[in-house]
Image (cartoon, rainbow, N blue to C red; front, side, top):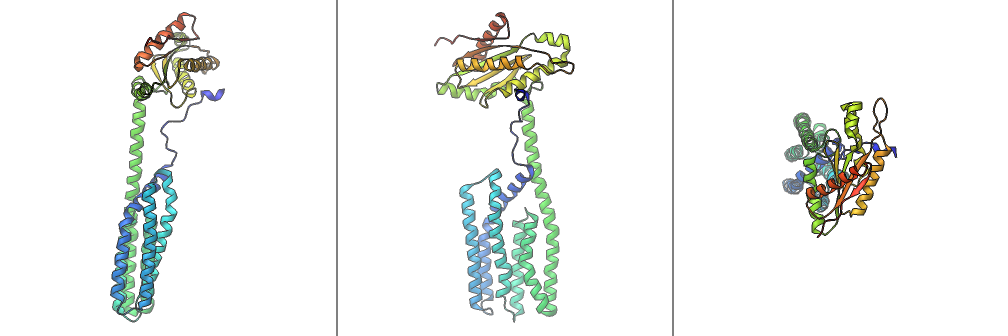
Length: 383
């Protein structure tokens, strides 16, 4: 029974860590940015095939073009499935490996395939191939900048095989072209760092601002002493379940709970002890209810509970459970535990929330007149 007094977990806590949420957002951005690049890749491959056709081996060009189209088709199928499923949150992370696998296949087809089909006896066609690869690398820099290592890996696979071949086999002209490409790669390292850091800061700042806004809204609607909703937030939240119950002819009950002889606690042990008693009662109330039930500190030492889809008899049992819990668990003060009891009034009806609370409050005062530390039920209103 001691577990009943523990603080409940904060509502609204996202089970996904901030790092995973940023990772999921980056992946979502990659899926959306990469989709047009599929068609650009096939179009540029066709252009390169036409430019190399007069000097290259035709069967090699046809085979390479088929490979580029095949990997692009596989990525297109993946993107179509992604859009149909429309994953979000933690479910997005399961789509990371298929994305990386298909991207690796497409990039390898470009980086090593372009060297394979490149005419080895025509420096002009080699230079054309390298220029187109640099253009593809520039596109990768913009498309994959959300994930720095991915952008650098893609650029490296696209450019390094052709650059290494030119440096190794084409003498001084090839060396100059290869060095120019390496300079491009060095500039890409710095560019990706700047872009990636800026994007990560933007993602993190977005989540921090969202969490700060939600925390401010929770604080504005939370009573500081009890940890429950305050009266305004409670009444706002109660409108939807009350309307649902009335529309569907479902019973709705309210409980008003008041701590007995609360002034005696303040006078005997001090106002700090009274604050602890309020917090203690708030914990007991919160941990004794269903997730669909609403509760708040109404004012002073008085609490209100709304029980949607709950008839009077069941609400009376909930009230008795609360009364017994408060009696069983004294207020834990530094000097000694102080016993406390509560009186409760229960009412059921189809009327507006505040009118229902008023009838429960009248039943509460009857419980106090009859000796306190008890539950009293209001009579059902006449139809």
